[in-house]
Length: 106
Image 1 (cartoon, helix red, strand yellow):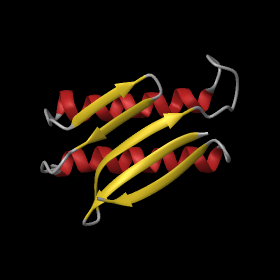
Image 2 (cartoon, helix red, strand yellow):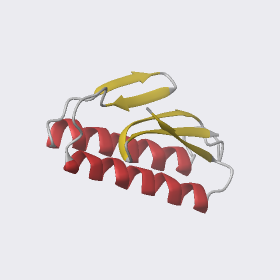
Image 3 (cartoon, one colour):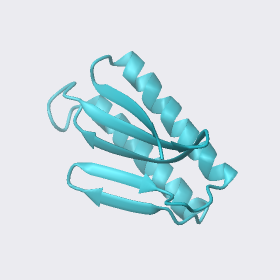
């Protein structure tokens, strides 16, 4: 199962992390993993390369994390994070049992 964790501060998203595998299909054919990976890459690239924001981004073998660590989250970056959260929620509804979403206040 994919673990998608959203971090919020005062009602605004300030980061996320993603780990695990959907196990919807075999590696290389799993459309849920592909959809989540693509959405996460789009979000990180949009925030860092298009908006020129500087969150902390960490990528390891089975985990991707983006955190604003006390930095101001511009409204445009907030929109990217909201869109990602919506997309992941809709995927979890379309493919039950593949994604677990949690939110935490930081």
